[in-house]
Length: 92
Image (cartoon, rainbow, N blue to C red; front, side):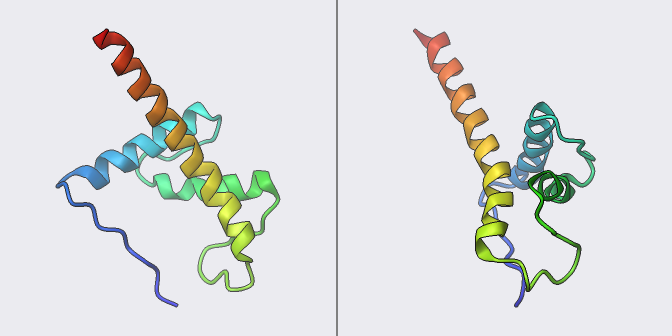
C-alpha cells in the first residue's frame, strides 16, 4: 500500500509543522533530530514496546500504529491548545 502524503495549503506550513513536532517531542523527553523529526516515531514505538521498523510494517496492527501516532499527534495538539489559551489570556 502506498504511503499517504498530506498536502499543506499554506506554503511553508509543512516545514513549520515539522519544526513544531520536533520541539514538542523534545519537550516530551524524546531525542529528536531536527533535520528528520519524523524519525521520532521509532523512539516512541520503542518506549511503547511496539516493534516498528523502517520499511514494511504490514504485520503491525492498526491499534499499535495508532498508539504511536496518537502519542505524537496528541502531544502536538495539547501544545497547540496551550499556546492558543496563552494567546487568548494575553488579549484580555
